[in-house]
Length: 239
Image 1 (cartoon, rainbow, N blue to C red):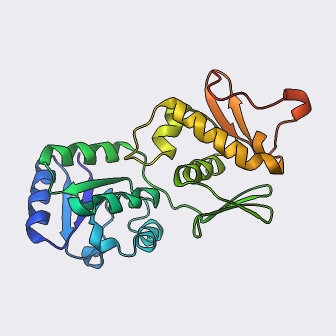
Image 2 (spheres, helix red, strand yellow):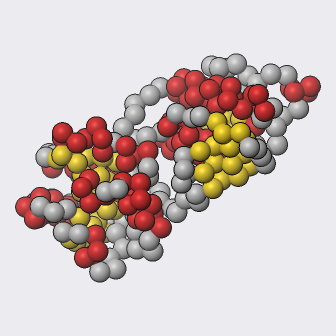
Image 3 (cartoon, one colour):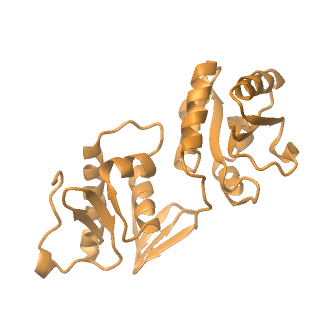
């Protein structure tokens, strides 16, 4: 049985052709010119125009917090000239970004890939672990009263660690779940960003909260390891 999909776009021809493609693939599809016209429809996946997301951060946050769309996967549809700017939506909570016009086959591949992922869940604006506070609303990481400057990928990785404290993740799992979907990177990229996060936390004595699990990957613990017992964190690239 197919999934429920909502198409929100200002161009009727695009909505109709996209709906036909998805319905032939077995999905329950509805379309709307504006999001407010959806009449309580709870889609498994939302295809939404880039222009309907202005301002992007606020719009995506409202979608993630609204009862009917809080668990929807979100694919942003953007004209090719705007695609580079629209990719920022991936850093702000969208699941994918697709350039318009697109081939029907590409649309179906992207839709099916999104639907295979677990449903989205509302994200807390503030994540806390001991003295560490990450605030998504203002894109800021605090250690006590000290604000740390993080690149977007490092911020996403830190947020993922804070959301999943104590759990162990392989490098491939971190790439799949903490990296923007448009970024293609190898497992050693994770090591580089973990090293950068540790370097940021080290002056405050919290770098060992990000712990290497040999032969598997990494975990985050709110309780730092005892340096006297374990020594320095494992080097970058350690198996």
